Image (cartoon, rainbow, N blue to C red; front, top):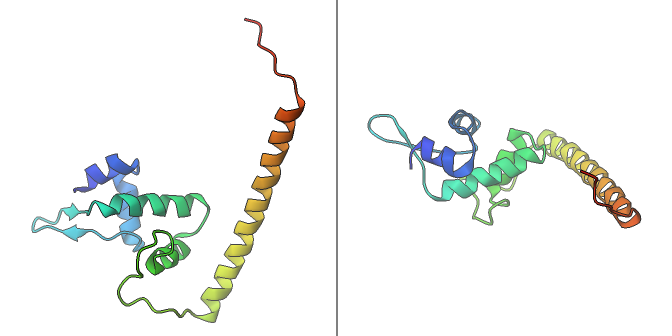
Length: 127
């Protein structure tokens, strides 16, 4: 499928899909005329990319998760090795701590909203 169709099927702009390609999150094959061609499985890949980025993961970390196949339950990409530098591991640990704090904050907010709704009496508004 061409980039416009992938954009339509995923709700992600063609410009953003090109950015994902620049960041090595998404790979397109090129036809003889230079047009990008995507596989049907790229629809799911783009959705996984969006989910990781929407969670606040920077692209370099999203790429590591996607390359390993963790987000999609697919096998790792060819050439993937189970090693990383101590610097990258430290950055990932910092990111993990940030995500854990974000989850904790979201859980507190969810609980507060739930408690509010469980406590109040809901009345119809006057028109």
